[in-house]
Length: 197
Image (cartoon, rainbow, N blue to C red; front, side):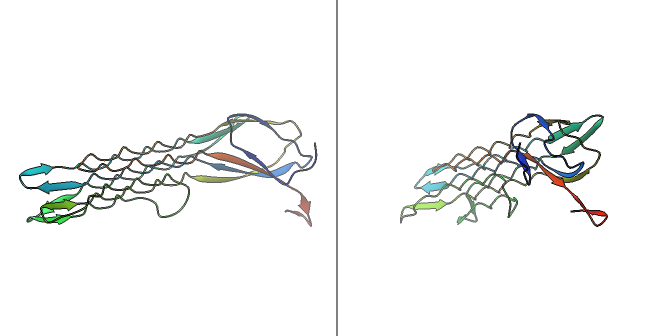
């Protein structure tokens, strides 16, 4: 096969080392967690109170595992984001639900949106908080040596965590998005001036 600069593996199974290089790098990435669900909106209209609940937390991502002979390398999955709080009332005043904690970067699942409701003269409403983004999975960088063409790597790819359910209320929050699956990247290295490059 033609020389490649790297190979990106996103499906479970067996990867066979295709290059003449006896040295390389392996980057193992765990799956990301799912986003938390958005909280539901509260509404008080006359004597009718439409209560609200918080969104569910996202599930954590699964680990990605690579076995080479007797050696095993595992990158843990990331945690899920926290669900947003439902809208509430404090001393008779509408208070928007708090956003759920989560990761501020990366490929974790997006948090769901809090439920929103339109106020009026006879209606007091409080919007739900947004769900937090899921956290990235762990990344491992492993130096490989003593490689030969056709050497086998048994790979289990972590699956991204599911998003949390949306909270219930006068207007429901939306569910969080699922996190990204894990992956493995192989990079061949060549020797130059006594070192690897």
